[in-house]
Image (cartoon, rainbow, N blue to C red; front, side, top):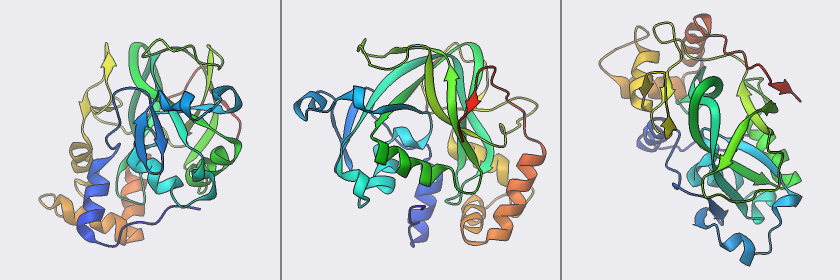
Length: 253
């Protein structure tokens, strides 16, 4: 079951341009729609060992997006710990997909030599089911596991497999920008090899040639409000998409 889009056009534009949304720089606890100090995990008697660690490399790392997905949902009554990690030999790039709320979404790709800062969301079984409900319908994403090297940003001893993590990945590959993936400027990296854009910059690339090139706001709203237009844009980016095969990704569903 997807979350509801805002009705006001200015709110829709802010949402579309805001992806992947602002996230804390360090580990935190998501509770009641806001971010709190990670130290409150212990105060709340939350056991990470009882939860599933899932990589959040796009909007799911941000309190704003977690609030849309979990506030008001039964599973949202439990807080969600998020731990910041450096994921080695990977980067986060734009996917060959435009979300129903107007943004170009993220994709995690294997990229030897690059390290990217992402988060682990520690989800209960009910919260994982809710996350599946927001990610998997429509076939835009799959859920599985990757073999990887990673380390906690704060040096935390985290109770999960040190060589394998769960993740959602795009079913349609990466956005093709001049023959290469285009990285998300918002995410901190080390030794990044790809060119990076912010969301507004990539939206200009995606919508160019499909309408009035000088009126990005109109194009964004059109993609949200007129399904046939968004379908045309999505078909165009998928036709030129890059196959970003991951050597260890195994799909669960």
